[in-house]
Length: 312
Image (cartoon, rainbow, N blue to C red; front, side, top):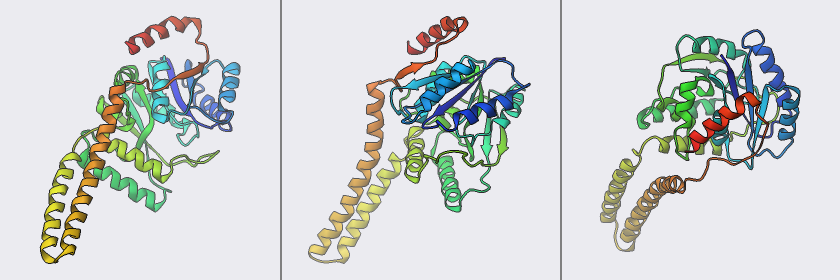
């Protein structure tokens, strides 16, 4: 069965050759027919030039270049839409998703699963990041309408019907961890230890991780709206109680401070949902393609037909 591998890339000019060599080595004698789709997410270095060079020397490596940096989620969606295989793998370009796991994952997928997920152990991770992650997953189990597995990220292999289900989802704010869980299907897991980057630096800073976590918590439920209402009532009651314990201008200051804090908090929660509603209403495309490698003639008609179906 034909295998497609989707690899989002941002400023990975020094790592693409290593990725090529690692994938070729891992799949030798395991998969005969496969393609690798390098999605250049508006890189500012020579990532696109490297992708062109790899595509010229090895036709199994294709590339799609986006017109600017749209983010990893749109880049993954772009790659999934361009994938032609009956099995589709998602992995990062920095080799922190070990290509050597793919044979095990493919064998497990062929036993009847529609998703096989590489779940990362937290050995070797910093204490603060482990604590932050575990806290987040506890919150997700309490708040989200889908169940997220601790350590399960984007590194996975999907069946064709799982991929078709993913690309059919129209929302603008895409939180892939939640979407993978939302589509359901039988899911298998393999565990691996964290692998350090071989080149460059991670772009997942604390602020980016926090933003990503907020996306997840607000994309799959509206439960924060109810606690915000209750918190508003409790804070208003506290402000009134505090106002009875002080006199004169201090009483008004306590009341105004309490009510002001409630209003700011409520506006923040409502603004988060309102902003997402506006983004969905605009219906802008998730990304814009600037350039892509040509498809072989045998697949060009099929790909145009599938793209037309997705757009419609």
